[in-house]
View 1 (spheres, rainbow, N blue to C red):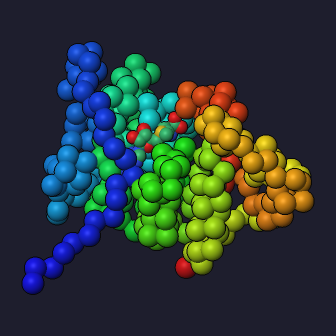
View 2 (view 1 turned 90 degrees about the horizontal axis):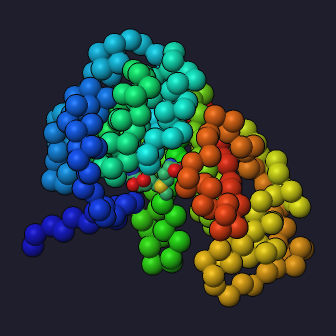
Length: 277
Ligand SMILES: C[S@@+](CC[C@H](N)C(=O)[O-])C[C@H]1O[C@@H](n2cnc3c(N)ncnc32)[C@H](O)[C@@H]1O
């Protein structure tokens, strides 16, 4: 009997992916420069088997490398790249208009320390990144997939943490942010329970100061969706574990974050250190 192959569900759905003419021109000019020209596999977001990139030659130097997954229109990575010219950045984003917008900004601002991969980050990690190459990994506001039937699409899963372990250098930092409390808890549990990562903020922002306590007390996530709310009394809502990081100073407030705040959701920052093996 033919063997069945079950694929993990993708963490994204590509909707309108067409480029307006000005972005198409930027795309064409940036391809093979800021925008990596990668042969596709069976999907246009996958990487052809056997293709590889010599990262040292690509950036023309040896420097710390930071990967941002799901960079959107690149607000965070562009600001960080401008502030840290001695560091190289790789922005991975499946949404073509977002990648084009970042390419346009890099060209406008003359930033040479960023490359963009308009590809599935899982493919980039598996096929293009060697062991220990990253000094930092950033995942800011990954798609929340907050409906129960969609949660399997969430990027942060045990299998993804294993990929992060491989590509992050020992003592490298994994930074995350989300505006959905149950995704924040999922991140804290999955990465926090991994033997390869250490949470430097264990026990911090617990109790009444925890953003999770505040969300539970007001049922803020449900409220932000206009759903019926079920606020919890303080003793039930209390997040005794904490472990939340302070806001990462280099993380600029993107439009996405502003909308979340406007809708009444709390922001959770997390960071983890890759243990030396
Ligand atoms: C909610 S948006 C956040 C964008 C940005 N980080 C911000 O804070 O504004 C999540 C982004 O992740 C991208 N994304 C989701 N899964 C991805 C994957 N597997 N590889 C690359 N990008 C992905 C989506 O296309 C989307 O632009």
